[in-house]
Image (tube, rainbow, N blue to C red; front, top):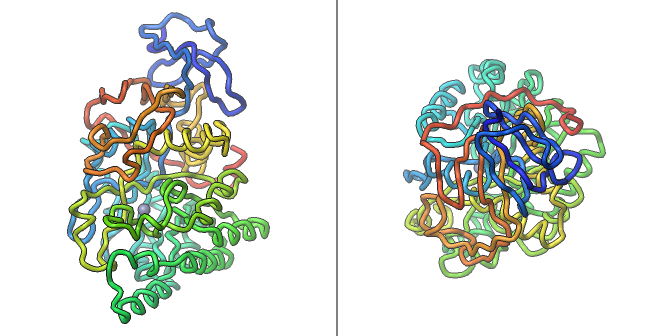
Length: 460
Ligand SMILES: [Zn+2]
């Protein structure tokens, strides 16, 4: 007897989309068979007219984060409920090293934040702020503990330590670690910021001018040279403009292992919003870009340059966002976990820009493969965790903050009509959200140790 059967749906598996029934036992998928061929089950969900997708894997979140003395609007409970309501069943969050602190301490602290709160499974990258010799010695152990990815910020305190970061790149490469890069050039940002201040232009509307696309291009180009000299594979987070994508295409042609992520806001929103009253609600790092850059992101999704769409979910209240008196003090980030999958379906698949198979690769299969979670996560196949989304391609939802599950008090996509929304989200065989209502206990989510980076991930 199966624990759960999902019958009558159109199932997206690696090789096709076709009608199939899915059998679940012990939290895992035990059968994917033609309709009507499953053994009896304790519970059956009728998925007629629905798409059945693997639960999405968002490898870029910041839950229970702190910045400028404020605490983010989502902890691991509300953040993971928002994720689950949007069809995300695994996140990889960024654990921050304290200045002078141990990398293992960062993981311990973040596991503590998540442990009694998360309703979905989670892992951690370690953001390395101080690449000391002691930190470098910890890299191999951190990979062994199931956290084989690291973050380097090029826009703050990078320049003075660039040589130590080169050592980190080399060490990560040796140990099966993947370095993720926030690519904005510290010096260009510093120069542009000072020039604006000198001209008395300190209002929020000048924020985009302080971090122009060329700062992203310069940082990507520099990081690619650092990858070349160290042999390190690199993963660029939240790319936002055209020039860096061209750099990445050239680097791949030259044989480097380079991966690219973008973020929903760069697919749907443009910089004019930042210059409007209350534009601070859309502030992220990097800033929103031009319509031409937005179009370049879609081209990158369609032609395979971009491997992953991830949220960088980091949510704040309007009070936090409005709290700064100059553009240099604006808090970056916003809520996005609940809208990641439905909006990519609505704006990407339904509008014919990408196929449903490509969407599943971008939000589930590729991040699972890149970050060492595959084939346990990110795919509908026998033996995988039963992390599933029963997705109604016809349900229309108008994004309205009071109905969303983030702890934030605004949604960047407020008022947008989205066609296609998750009906049921299942994690390890358990229904955790049904018709937008959470059904799971805080703390049911588990830490998932991840495998080291495999440079041949595309062929897994
Ligand atoms: Zn981030």
